[in-house]
Image 1 (cartoon, rainbow, N blue to C red):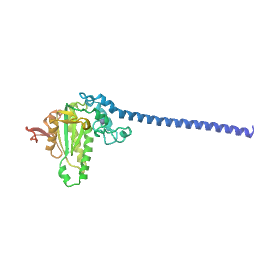
Image 2: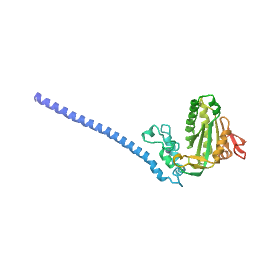
Image 3: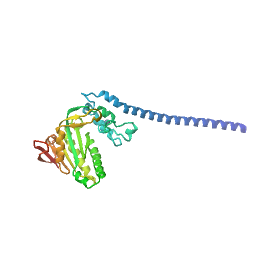
Image 4: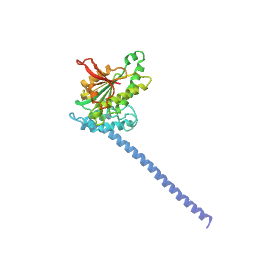
Length: 306
Ligand SMILES: [Zn+2]
């Protein structure tokens, strides 16, 4: 064989290797391009679902039967809240706990323009009127906040309250409570119909309160907490329609819980007799007391938990 023949074989080999390398490169690029395309499609699909579910929910909710209440009874809302709470990051929908930041933002989940406390789907599903339901109502506030704020700047006061809100929200929503903030007060509504609460509602509320007081005690720059808890039937839902739709509870139960809270001393949990009776067999140590509550004709029997 001549030198030229050897040269030809060498060139052929190089050509084959070049073609194989090009093929490998093509396969590699197509796999990555395919994966990228799949990711984009998936993101688009989720974003589409997230943005159109409000439209679907609006059609499923009726005045007589708002979608949220049956969903609470079946445990659907509770399960979703527990799952969505694990996703970062704040702020979140007050009802379903879906985050508006972080992953929520990636998936195009946006707060409802009429009420940014809720996601668009929850806002559509909220009742437009009130419904009588059995609830547990918990009020907690920072004791001595008014006198504390006299000696501090307004921004320090706002900071203190916002950190208290964040801790209270974290502690109370871990038990499916629906939390609302009023001034330096936190109001938590526990729907007894929720399967995660049911007959254990009173125990769950007391345990959550203890965790909240403990959490506040660990923070150096904080104030002691006063808590009032009551249970009973209340009108739950939205008082206003349209733009200011909201989820809240109205009635004597709420007023009594608020009054109990204002009568509670620093780090004291004041529960009504109804709540004490609803506690499980192993009752906690408590001091029985009668209170003359502002705006109430009759004396109210309450228990101070230690
Ligand atoms: Zn929501």
